[in-house]
Amino acid sequence: MSEPPLTIVWRRQVLEAVLETAFIRHVLLAKIERPQRWMAIEEGDRLPLFDNTLIVSFGDPVAYFDAVGERGIQNVGFFQVGDEKGDAGCRSYDGAAYVLRNYHFAHQLARKPGRVSWVPNGWARAVGPVRAASHLSFAERTLPAFFSGFVGQDASQIDDRQRMLKVVEESGIAALMATTSGFGLGLGPAAYGAHMGNARFALVPHGRSPETIRFYDALEMGAIPITIDGAWMHAVDGLGALGPPPVVMLKDWSQLPAFMAPYQGQASRSVVEAAEQQRLACVQWWQAIKDHYGSRVARLINGATGATD
Image (cartoon, rainbow, N blue to C red):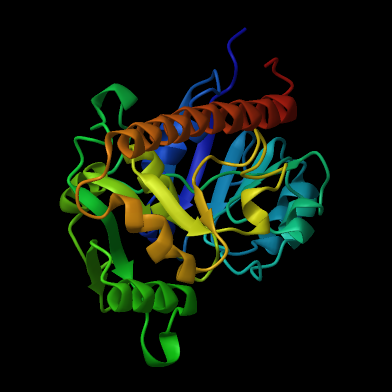
């Protein structure tokens, strides 16, 4: 007997706002061995009440999951996206058969033990998927370091990005810094992806949350991320599931000039070879993480529907 299809339901505004929809389709849901149907509804429309559904939402649709329970609807999961500050609420978790969420916050993950899973944001649209065999090697890349994005200003200032920018400017580090005046106002997707694929190092400061899509963009394009170390990098139910990522983790951006010094100008052969080994380790680790969470999502959904893994 064939498995029932899984219907992934989005409000159109959510579907259009989320940058990682291709990653969700091609990585996170790729190992579910059943038909999948994507369904968009308008803001005023009611979420559908039928079995074997995954609801994708920014918020906490408590009333909907109350109705799921009252009507005996089976196998309805919840994918909470965009909760970068961990304050969107998680009461809906109680009524969901399983929960997927971006951004690692222990209190949400503990809400329903064994049925809630963190999943990586993943790369943005027009970045992946990219085969590792098509990456430029470290030696072939011509951008020493690269950052593109909003650093904030005035009341909307993003502190970690401002600190990074100040260090780069004051130290004279060779880097392409494509800062922008607002979210999504920078390089076009194709140019952004091509620059990332030509960068030796990707500067990955924190945004509103330590976890940013830029981190995954860099990994997918084969650049070595440089970021500030934090608990989320080591969480065994998060990014550290397979051990700490082999990226460059600084204690503070003040360490960046000393780290980058060997790569300014003509780097020695031994330095380039060692960096290429680190780059390859990042690529291999990233593939393993994608496989790990793709399998975990499949287990959660198959477990909810009674299917085998």
